[in-house]
Image (cartoon, rainbow, N blue to C red; front, top):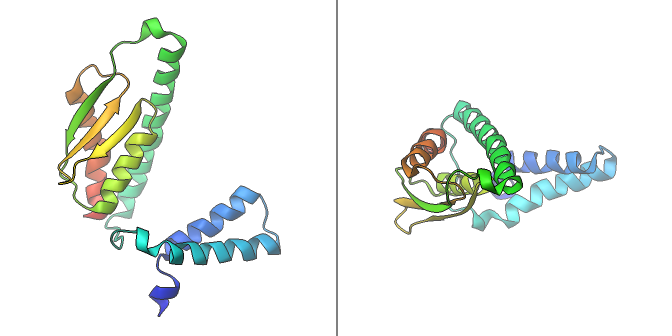
Length: 163
């Protein structure tokens, strides 16, 4: 019965807190509305989650988040650099095929989101058999460096978290 009412308790709490942060208010109305949204959204979107999420290593989540923040910051700088100074662009854009060991659908979704949100990448596609991710990168010198970076900084921590 509790699982029907609270299918994703962490998501409910996160949505509630996010609502309060976005509105910069802890008034009674916002507390009630945040609680309603935090309870209803996970119930309504239950069918969109492919599998229940079982986090195996909370420490790996922090490591992954730190990697994503650092990489996003560096990528922002690099994108501004070659937009502001096109002649300083070191390498052309290219597609990179990244072989995957990660098989968990939730982990693959997070991998695709992280790689797409990082400036300098604009598109990711995971093959139907989940063995390869095709990633468009705006500046590719050595594709193997990109493959190694994605596998080390993102895929391995995601495997620790989800598998």
